[in-house]
Length: 257
Image 1 (cartoon, helix red, strand yellow):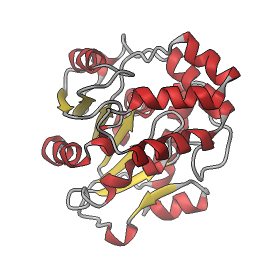
Image 2 (cartoon, rainbow, N blue to C red):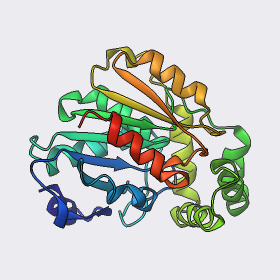
Image 3 (cartoon, rainbow, N blue to C red):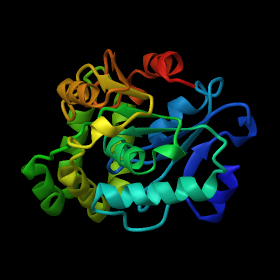
Image 4 (cartoon, helix red, strand yellow):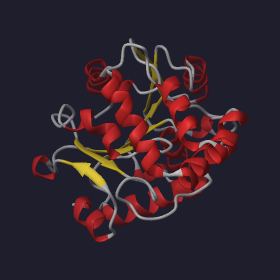
């Protein structure tokens, strides 16, 4: 099982391996910029009837050592190596990514579609342009800029404790890693390549998302022939923690397990 391989490679993750079954597909979840496996904590248990749910942490994030990367392609190459070396190919891998993680998932699917059974793209786009004032702010006023990013990321109805935890994860990633994450997003563009994707693809947006607005998900839906699009009400850029019940219901019903 891939969990043992992840331990050997000193890769941070969250999962309930005691509940894993060879009869279920494996859902591997990839967090966004400055994130960690905790971003997917509310998916682990609820999705266990459908899949072996596993949230991994990218280099420089959470418990995975490293300095991170400054391009989506580098992150995607890392994920490809992890998937190829940690799983046998019989797990029926479904790769789900949020925001920057969604860009990484696109790149993995374009490079190595045979590794995967399907993909889920959450609050992401074929391009992820970042406002110059955010990039500049991460260099000069890190904590203040993190606070601003987080204020855009959650709906007003979100529990303040949830927002504080999101800010804490970004702060822990540190200025260098977070800036490189946002630079990677800013440089990303899969627009001209997505028509090649044949994998089953579920696209999920947040109703009030300001960071990756609904139009980006709609563009993805138009560009990926095999995709379906769903929206999570009462959620902004973090629907998996803002409205996890509906988010998990969408996954349970619409992913081709």
